[in-house]
Length: 165
Image (cartoon, rainbow, N blue to C red; front, side, top):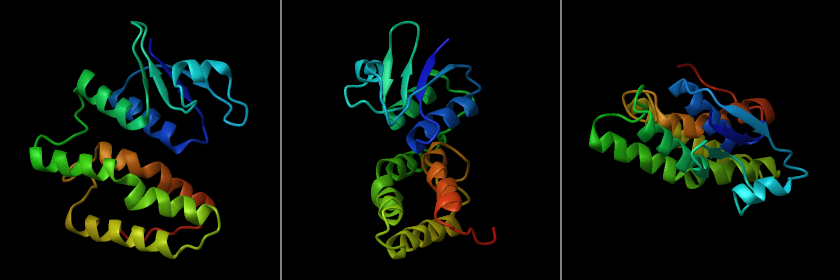
């Protein structure tokens, strides 16, 4: 059974947990204390970050984006990228540009640097979602999974409000 080194408070690790759940893949979770990281996590990922996905065959993958792509290719059903090549490429671009599109503004707001940039980034995402039902395109998928942990944390920690659907 695969192992996921994770931390409940880490939104990047949440991406991997969501992708595993969507794929219906059972795994052993090893909770890592981010305030006191054990040497083991540095053996699995030289940066000491979670998530890290490990298979019994010896494959060790750090980084949520890489883990999500691997799971999609290794376990193609249910598909979390669209069949359409253009939609798939645009979805991958959304994941690749996460920090620019949302992450940096979220963390700035968490540091108390104001909410203006975060509100603007959320408005941009909202405009995108007016043109298509999901960040991934016409169907829910990996781009949505890449963003949802920060939206949920924003609702909880920053008082974000979602408008009517």
